Amino acid sequence: MLVETIEMGSAAAFSPPREKLPYLRAAVRKLDTAKLLLMVLWETKSLDNRKYVALSEPIQEAGRMLGGWHNSVLQKQSPQIDSGAS
Image (cartoon, rainbow, N blue to C red):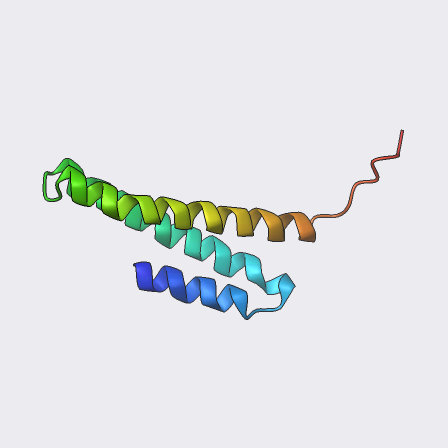
């Protein structure tokens, strides 16, 4: 799951600007699935609190970074709105 996230991020990094969004969306989905599975492990007591925190913090940070990248690409692809129009 995390390897697939890295794969999608790498594909987005090396894709032309207009082709990045599908890869970024896939990376976000894969990371969200990893977060969910990690939470299931914690809730079923298969993972103690210390290990859960140690694993979830870098995953959360990666999610923030992917989200920022996704939003940046989305904003660049959106039509520009003329702020001076009345």
